[in-house]
Each structure stands twice: as structure tokens, then as C-alpha cells.
Length: 299
Image 1 (tube, helix red, strand yellow):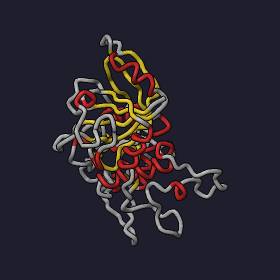
Image 2 (cartoon, one colour):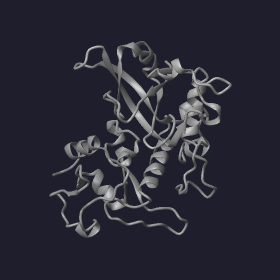
Image 3 (cartoon, helix red, strand yellow):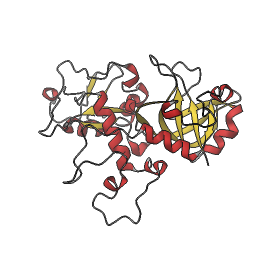
Image 4 (cartoon, rainbow, N blue to C red):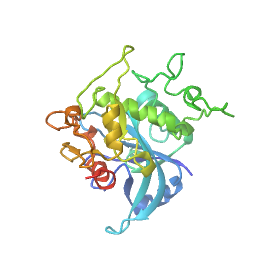
């Protein structure tokens, strides 16, 4: 197995998503080496200069594109956004074959849509992308809040002593409590700690927000830890959303199930329009909203 960089741009002609990466046959041998391991997405961002690493995912399989010859899909699981995009030249650059010691960029390497990289390079990218501390961490115990990369504070949760603290960054991203904490951090930031369905922004005495981060397509159904598969909800409406008593249309109209045994209109925004980020790249994706309406919502 190996780690790799997958190039993607917003206006790509390829059929990429958080769940799959579309590529021509010339990269098949490289992608095959990555099956069972993690990759990082890389490319331009509208309105920003340069190229950025933006998130990670695990390649679990490869399948042919039945509609386009000599093209394939790499199926991706466990997608996780970075805290913020990481510029490819940060701290002198991460990929030794891409950027020389003098800072010059290898043009031939730069145009490759799939680049295999060393484990140490991958770990450095992931650490840069996931090292931002949560401004509003949940209280774990009576001690100071954990650093976002301190495994000793987020493993176990009161279970018997762990035989070993996982210290590799690439192993860290497999840890569900860590991923949950990161997902919550990202969603709370882009929703400004405000419940999308009620419009409430409740903050406790220590500055921690009451709002929770809900997966639209649940993790147990391979829903990614992407902002676009998330929405900020208060506890009660989160419970109703997860149980299919509330859902969301593609235009972000809040949908109420006929199975509700009480009228909950007083809990929701009067116009039944969810508050979502203004940036369309951060809004709930139609693919996951459709999944929730089809598989979860009790219409």
C-alpha cells in the first residue's frame, strides 16, 4: 500500500465526489497501489492563489467507468476536511519530488493528477491540515482541554488503560473520537455555532456552544466527515433529524414528517428555511440531502 495526492479542481471535467475519484487509465497502476490506504486531495481553490491540500480519504476499491472507456473510479471512504486548506509550499513544501530544496517546482511532477508520496510526507500534510486547536472544545475532564493531536486525551474515554498510545498521525485519522471532534469543530465554525433549524445560538458560561454537528448521511452508512455532509443542530432537532422526523429539501426548506405526534413548528424558524453558510462550497450537498430524504425521512 502507499499514500498519494489526488488532484481535483472545482470545474473539473472529471466526475469526482467525496465518495469517489474519477481518473484515466494512465494512473491505474498508481491508484492500485493506494487501495487500502489514505490519500489527500489537492488543487486550486476559487479566490485563492496557489494549490492546496484540502482533505483526506481512504481508497477502498477501484471500478471501471462503464460510460467512458479507459477511465475508472476510486471509491473513497472516510473523507475528512482539513481544518483549513494547506498551501503546498507551506514551510518549504511537503513533497520532495515536487519542490526542490531551492524552492523550485518540478513542472513534470506538478501536472500529474495522481502522485505517490512517502509516508512521512503524507503524515506532515495531515498534521498541518488537522493541527488547529478547537476554539470551543468539549470538556473531557477536569484538566485543560486536549490538543487536537494529543491522542492520550481522546482515546479510551474511561475504559481500561490502553496498551499503547497511537502516535502516528496516519493512525490518528482512523480514531473515531478524533474524527468526531474534528467534524464537530468544522461544522460549528462554518455555522457560527448557530442551529440551522431553530436559529438559536446558545453559549454556556464557559463559551462553549450548545449546538451539535449532525451527519446528514450517517457514518455507519459510510457518510463522510465532510462539512458538506454536516449541519449544525440543537440537541432536540438533532434527535428528530437522525430519526427521520425532520429533513431538508435541496433548497434548504425544513421538512416535517407526518409521523410527528406533536406540532414542533414553535421550535423551528418561522419561514421553515434552514440557516446554511452563504458559501455554496460549504452548504449541505444535494447528494447527501437526497440520501437522507430517501433512506431516513418518514414522509
